[in-house]
Length: 119
Image (tube, rainbow, N blue to C red; front, side, top):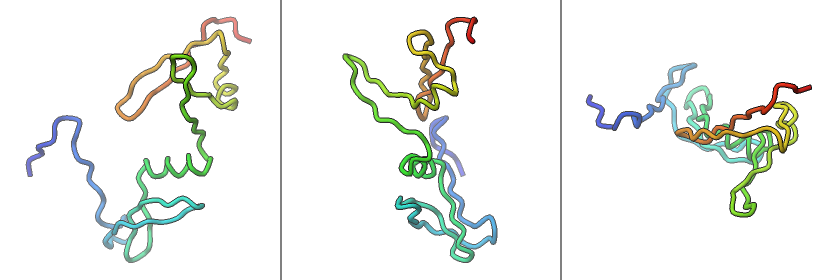
């Protein structure tokens, strides 16, 4: 079979059989902690497979992963960084810099510490 997708846009193959028992998988919806998620469910053993995107959605909606809404600050769009991340990454407001890398599926923020005499 010939792939007609442009480079980098290849279609991802969905599994069709269960990795545990080899039975057929079927699209399903499941509710976990009040969040409805899409999955593939084995018709024999009941194993459920979730995409990484669905699991991230679950973590954000249940508060297990920090998520913040964007807001306007003057002429800029901003987000608040949770205090736990500021502490863990030793970010010093007013001193350290943020560098942004645009990625195919999101935005990567890198912290640049501006001096070496950090204590």
